[in-house]
Image 1: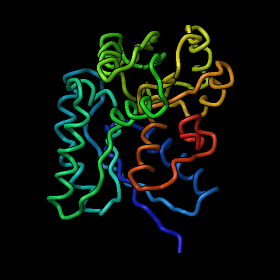
Image 2 (image 1 turned 30 degrees about the horizontal axis):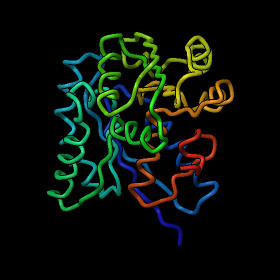
Image 3 (image 1 turned 180 degrees about the vertical axis):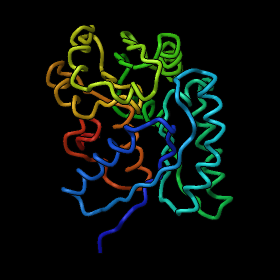
Length: 250
């Protein structure tokens, strides 16, 4: 009998990408592995990617975890990288522990991952030391993300901020532009390219092209989150066409 897993996602109200890219990867996996997935979301209000709005949004994550645990999901993914990183170094561990406690108190204990923690963990798994990074945020928020990642033990040697303040516009950014953006960056001296340090900026369709173009492994926040979801479910973390991390090499 095929086993089916319920994937819960806590998403910003204006996010349109995580509910497309994560299902796209897990549905692609269904073509090569027997497990099946259904997808369930709860939303936190957020329209502008600004520090104050992110903090207000994060305060809603406990409610979202409770709502998803009502549906007895098998894993919860907190799908906003910058909201976690804006709360201070190491906050992904605090958030994951607290939200996990909410599910347990509701009689439906489930592992909780965050896209921020998943990205950091993925960089460790890939053995990265020096990275290049593309983010859609304004420069001060991008610097905050760079500092958070650096605090976790990596050197962000090159980064590019697209400076898109509106979260809906981030979701509308054309991923076909990403290879050209990366081509304008220095990448020969890095171990991994983070093509999208944001779960709202679409990037899945550009991963293979950028890996071919640069000869470097390419990671995105959505790919890292998908890897973490599969590991939390004790499933083989392999997805065709989703880049190095999900190739089966790790």
